[in-house]
Image (cartoon, rainbow, N blue to C red; front, side, top):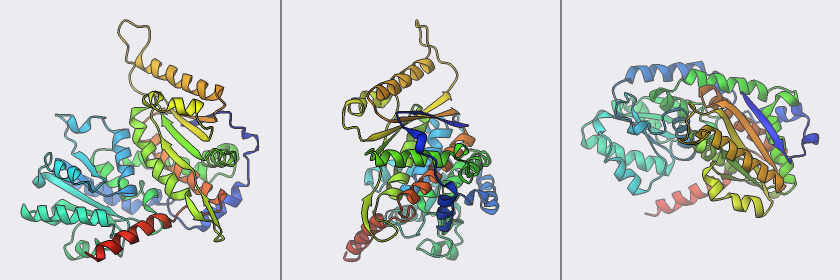
Length: 410
């Protein structure tokens, strides 16, 4: 399903005490690797998707950060790249409002029909200021159009608390819970990602099947069979050698937003001021997202001849699409892409830049589910290697508190 090809990494001493680190991860009591067995949520999501099939022309997700990036990745990776422009498509168009820029909001209104739109409001806490503000706006517009909120809104939020729980309970607005022990950036395989995915025709059973296969590897105590532990070990070993930045560079247009999703996961999980003992350590790996071959023409000069402070993770997809021939040439676009990727790897290696190529046979639900679990699990191991809590985000919370403090004065 997924294989590694390592260059300039010096992996001889990467083997470690997997059992020790597995116990440490499990002691955190986080549910990111258990939620994929939540049969009730899976059943409820599929039932809801079946119930509303054909009723909406547009699905609008109101959310930010972990409430949006996974959904965007699912759509980009598993649907037609121009899905929303397909005139004959019977699948609802998906729009993710992951910002509060007024242009994004007002220009969305130019392309949706409120009477045929379902709004999915996603906030782990139920109190995210940006998401609540978006909800207020579109709820007011829905009221202006005299729409029944039960038919045009869905909440995905904390099972018990938060602002969204009140209208959900009082107005009987459909809602799905984000488990208390799953953080937003680890929530793509909860209803956060599964519900929008099911609504636009993605097979969530296959997505979860792939995640379970990788989960089994994550729990395997054999180093050679535990890809998440291998990946985390490589990242940590290279960090110790001064490679404080990780460049994730898929050679597939459909995986470009996967790199965006991972950027948040790595940054929020590993960038920490304090270690588990309360000591100031200011550790972190800076994530950089790139896209092959696009960024060979925008970033590769720096990567090959600039500071040697980066680990490069390239993603190769063996079967991208049917062979597309280049007229009057002896090769296809598929072959040209692979030649360019090989050249990038060779150039990085020649310049003594550590790089890892992650090989995937094809982009489908199973493999994407496995990729989500691979990077989430590796991040959990990384947290233990760094002796920090990979599951909190005090730096983000400080910004949120300062925002709320300013708003309270208005």
